[in-house]
Image (tube, rainbow, N blue to C red):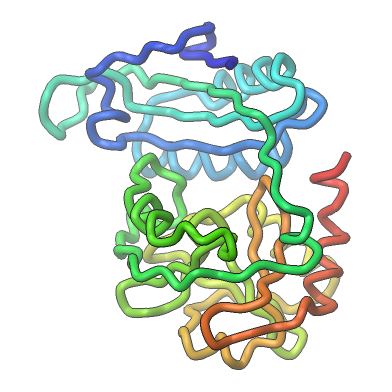
Length: 271
């Protein structure tokens, strides 16, 4: 399978790489169709924020150029882009002359059951909680052990995703998705100032909903609000939107706003 390191075909990474040792870096999972990365502007914007916060010395123009060339070779599938701080000596302190590593890894486009999109999915209530770290909140950094632990909680295929909460019990997101509630015609999604990933599809939905005149509220979401929601849906950049049919004792219909937004995003996923 196609893989690059620093713009060249390669598969071997140094055992001294700080991405391996400390999760010191960022990544993006990018849908590629007809040789072009989808939602590129949004992926780059999130990378820019992550590079700024982690102080990674890298040219994002170079990263984007490599991604475009890599995507042209891939054609259709998924490009995983990773930036690590590169090699370093033992110890947490980053070296002043660190050389950021740019990794690209191709994989086939995932095949999700059509019923997930059409009929909705059931969520597993994860016991694993998301720790709060405002300095990393919103970023797609390489430290993903919370998601690994949460995903290991279930193996029953009846559950397509898991619901994750923070240490105070507030609803944050899915294991690999962002989550929206619909209540009285407004979209509600979690404020990601303490933890969670600011998904690119989440950003796309917020903008499109606003353009359609749909109210969008970004704030803390308490667990008890699930019972009051009219509709619930998940989103990510690979599958778009999945309606949520239920979790534990709660159940929802596949509602009109969910269907409307699915229609709005169809061209991003099908063309």
